[in-house]
Length: 137
Length: 137
Length: 137
Image (cartoon, rainbow over all chains, first blue to last red; front, side):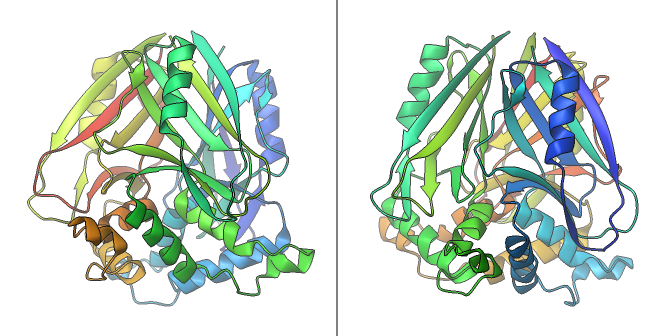
């Protein structure tokens, strides 16, 4: 059995931003030398998400508007009594999901034609880490 | 370490449909010969979901009505500027989740009494693929 | 390759309750002896969730109010025609997610500073089981 661990650091220009990390993840799969296995990818922060969807700018705009409708940014959340102002970001990450697991087959991400991996940042503009863990052989 | 990879093809009669794939997954676990490990199941498409919930027809109806409330089908999504009409389907799949991972113990899905595995199709009526990856021993 | 399987039993005092299980999971990782791998944690029930977020009481209150807004408890769900009254609980668990997978590195949960693991119970006050599966080496 082989395992391979990698930490990516991302600092987004906007507070809320989607970053396509698919190419970066493909590189990590290649450098791991794992031919058959599973890769787990997750932010190490609780106001961010790693998810798989379409790499289409209109859809990414739809996500932002939809999340704002489901959990408005400006609401006065209980969480804000701690001095924070990012209550919405914890809820948005819940909708988008924390992590994704992807199969590795023949040394590559076993993906359908439109699958792309995104880091969803909901409280950015500072260094955040993404954890990549591969297990397989 | 053993790995086992399988692709299922599903073509639903309805555009939106839930398909119980539990028995099919049990067969794949058995044919893999894996006694202890993890199975990852995901659609290879971005308008579909694999999730675990109750096999009860009323609840499946509740899911459809609830998803329609959270992200209406008829809304004019930015994504539609590409010529697509399935913006809602990308959002529904986000709510329902892309993938599921399940423990394999003693050669079987390690399930509670009511857990059932569903493929959730939100833009169907054409061939779609589901990926099944088992790792273990 | 090593695997390690454990079942936790939880009986919450309230019907709806969040329980921080991080320390319990850390103990299981330690007793497994696995140094590099993945741990999968999921309820064996379909009205509960295992998720990762902030251990902050105000945020946990926000989650409850938000879930009630997205899927009201008192609504007359189709699922209730079976005699059940927990339709909302199936939907809440869908929002919060069924399971989580976490990397194990150097024999420990590979966690960011604020990540905490919660069992989210939405129809409790009876014994429920959580499955913990570790694979690695």
